[in-house]
Length: 164
Image (cartoon, rainbow, N blue to C red):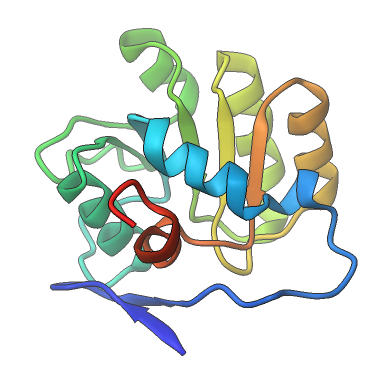
């Protein structure tokens, strides 16, 4: 089953996931609901002008929900009428720490992104579906960040978002 976002790609709907997952690493429904309600600024790592990528559809969805989106991508492209930056650090230097660093990068590349989120004082990291790095998630949790992993805010919104 997949979450179809209007005018964009889709992502799978959340399932129960493997039994025994640590909710402090993967995020439970209460944390997800809190982030969807309260987190206003989202740095979306991997967001480019490529409209067929899931990052674009999810960022567009979050923007429609009133969230401030900042694209983080090596090309530093402006996306969705927002200025783009090459790194989390560059964006935070100009805009301040985000509420969430949302990661659309491969699992083997996400560790340094999580470390950047910790370094700039982000409140949370959100690793999208199939982006799993438990060591990086532990570092974030141990640094005091909220952690959501292997979930999608657009898929969770209908059930857990503020209008739900």
